[in-house]
Amino acid sequence: MIDRRTNVSASCLSRAALALLLPLSLAACGRGGSSGAETAAPAATGKATVVKLQVFGDTAELKSYRELIGAYEAAHPGEKVELLPVGKQADHMAKLSTAFAAGNPPDLFILNFRRFGQFAAKDVLLPLGPAMSASGQFKEEEFYAPAVEAFRYREQLMCLPQNVSSLVIYYNRALFKQYGVPEPQPGWTYFKDLIPAARLLTRDLDGDKRNDIHGVGLDPLLIRLAPFIWGMGGELVDDLQAPSTLTLDRGPALLGLNAVKLLISRYRVTPRLIEYQAENNDARFARGALGMLFQSRRYTATLRELEGQGKGLDWDVAPLPRLQQEVGVLHADAYCMARASRQPQAAQRFVAYALSEAGQSILAKSGRTVPSRKTVAHSPAFLDPTQKPAHAQVFLDAIPTLRRTPNVAVWHEIESKADVLLEEWFYEPPLPGESDLEGADTVLVARQIRDATRPLLAEDLAREQARKAPPPAAGGAP
Image (cartoon, rainbow, N blue to C red; front, side):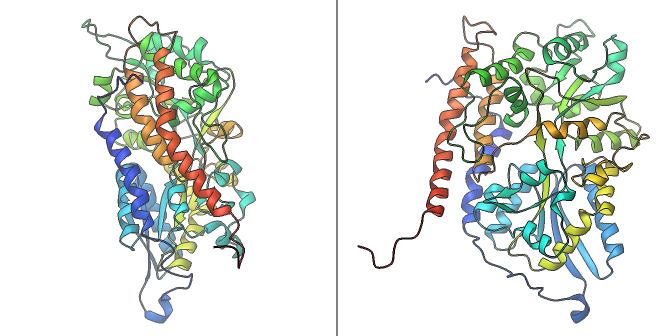
């Protein structure tokens, strides 16, 4: 097998290393901790009940969580929530891993649906769905089904969804107007609309043969490429419920990957590797040097904060452009609770408030989330005509088309391995003598990803089969 990929970025290596370490640290945790009873109620001790909540996010996102906590504490005298903020998701995962290994995890924490399986498999999470449904604090039918199903593991609802976001196109309206490019319209397509727009927006302003404005920014990650694969009729895995292999090396999936590669190999409308490493796509869009950006709802909070600082753009959002099929990819986070929580009842009260109309409205107004609660998603808290984006309805219209990745314990490790290879494949030129249409390099990386991740899926399947196997009959032969 040809291995052309040796220049792996430090960030990708960090993700891969964390994926290897996290299951080992969680294995030490087991089921220890609280059985579900409060250790001390405020009335009995005279002290405030303190629930620890760990979240990750940028300044704008963390500000919205502080507002949520402030509103909860005002409505619940004697109860406190201590926010444990972490700037980056990789650091968030590492901190959680360390806390579980030490037997001192936070009571609550936010997890993306692609990362909660590794915790659920080690049985360190208290299934919040059954616990809060039994107490009447959570009614599943009041929330969007794609977000709820994303946090079901072994038929139990482990974490309760905070949002039901999706991947959309953020676009700079000022650049579209400046260069006479029509703004995206409902039903627009990838090849006939997005690529021509990206080409018109890509500009060398000073004649130095380097683009100062790029038409589109796309992080070459598996979760970002998934809608291209699905959109061309391909699949990520052979079985969503019990995957045994990735299927990126099969015909339609390869077409989806090649469609992405054209952005840089043929049309050169996205930043080169050296530019991407010097400035990420989010920052490039924020300073007006990127015409379009593939991102989820959480980026809205960042753009609104920049507007408040007088650094805002004239921007809006559009749906993902259609390929052969109309499809979106789920981006959902949820409140998860440690089985070892010292304040389980207080923690559940906070989650109940955070998921209520009042609580979800606070995060929705910040721009951070697409509310998972249906009534809030259709309320002015989210569809505020005075706030950007003007076309916030795009996020709600995408919900029926959303697809997700498998809920397996090893999925985070799989993405970590795949992302390293995908980043290098995206930025490398085609193989010698190969045109950008032939895609031999794409076949190669798809097979490398398949072979690198297949052992992980085999181990996960074997673990699940062993769990389901009936116990040996009593008195049987030794």
